[in-house]
Image (cartoon, rainbow, N blue to C red; front, side, top):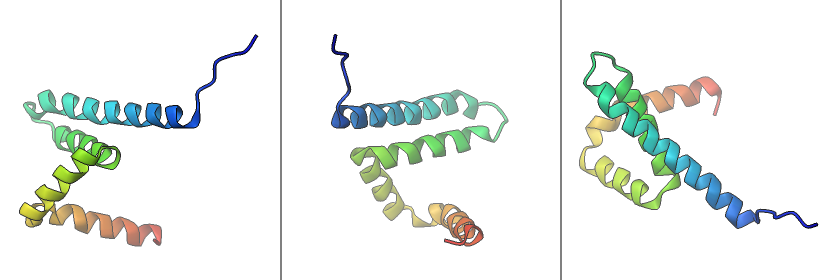
Length: 90
């Protein structure tokens, strides 16, 4: 008897959907934590936004627009990214 197999495009779509769900999940979990005096919420929501931006053209476009409108607010992230790249030798 033949077993059903997942084709490559369907498997890629499933992986993308899982990443999108993980990104939204992190953002949703970060929202109620934002009300608590724990700095974890910003990290959760930022990680979720980065996952979404990597896997969703719409989210990527929104992130670009936000970056262009508020470039100074992204400066600490850019500095951190440069520091991590230097440390990893990239």
